[in-house]
Each structure stands twice: as structure tokens, then as C-alpha cells.
Image (cartoon, rainbow, N blue to C red):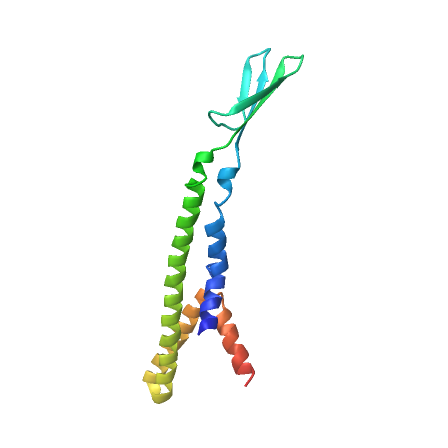
Length: 162
């Protein structure tokens, strides 16, 4: 059973390690500065911003042709404790954990419904048996859809080894 859950989580990219990576994603972003680069052609008064930021310390270089570059870096140290990127990463990790829980619950329900259907098949005959076998096959297909086909491949490996 646990193998089926793990296969579904891998296929959906909802493994614990993937969720941990998302949760850690925004950790150091407040330490990185916002960068602003401005090109100035003083002869034509044309200015071009590569990126924008506000309230930054600026350094400018102008050569003798009237062309200049201005570069500024801004650190938002006030965001070290409550970094919006970090908050967003934590929210995303919580959302992924909820999806993972829902997926594992669904896989568990399908797995045991399939096992019950197979148990019923052995005690039935005729149309009832065929109908219950179809139910088991449908549940197998659902498990295959959630595991990327791993479930049927695993069943074939077990049946082939007997």
C-alpha cells in the first residue's frame, strides 16, 4: 500500500522533499539587493531604465562622449523578518501538503476498494462476477492514472514472478 502512495506522490511531484524545497525557496531573497541600471545619453537626454527600485544609493559613470551609466543597489533589510517571498513560499508549501494529503487519501481509498472488488469476484458467478471484475479493472485504471502507469507495471512484475 505504501509503495502505491509513494508512486502517486512521485508522479504528482508531491513528495516531502519537493514540498520542503518549496518551503525553503524564499529564505534568502531579502538579502539580495534590488538592482537599478540606467543608461544616459546626455547629448540627447535619452534615459533608459533596465529595472526599477526606489530610495537606493546611486553610483554614476559618465565618459567624455556624454554617455553615462548609473547603477544603484537597494537592500530591503526591513523584509528580513517578514519577507513577502518567504511568506509566499510557505503558503505554497502548505497548499502542496494539502494536495498531497488529498492525493494519498484518494489512492488509499482506491487501493482498498480494488482489493474488496477482487475479493468479491472470487465469490461470484456469471454477470455479477463480470460486473465486479469491471469495477476492479476501473479502479486499477484509476490507480494507474494517479501513478503514471506504475501500478499496472508493478502488478505485472508480481504476477510474472510467480
